[in-house]
Length: 97
Image 1 (cartoon, rainbow, N blue to C red):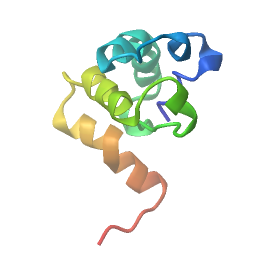
Image 2: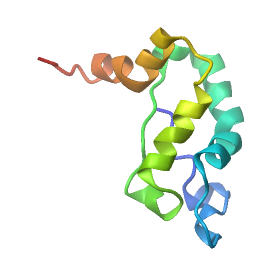
Image 3: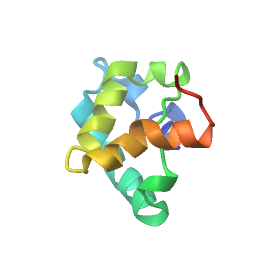
């Protein structure tokens, strides 16, 4: 799962700022970790996730998901589908009617 990286324990300090980070700031701060993980495990073995409500101290839910979209802007539609939906459906065996 690709998420939870912006928690205070990871040292970004988002929670100490007067203004919360933008999705661009989150994407830039986490890009090397996310891309490294995707390179090592592949798109078919990863999925984006939020660590809410724990992440709420660092950023908003919307800003977090927009940062994920920024990180994958150049990805193919099928890779985005896998990371944002298909892998979770497969892994958790979700029945979608």
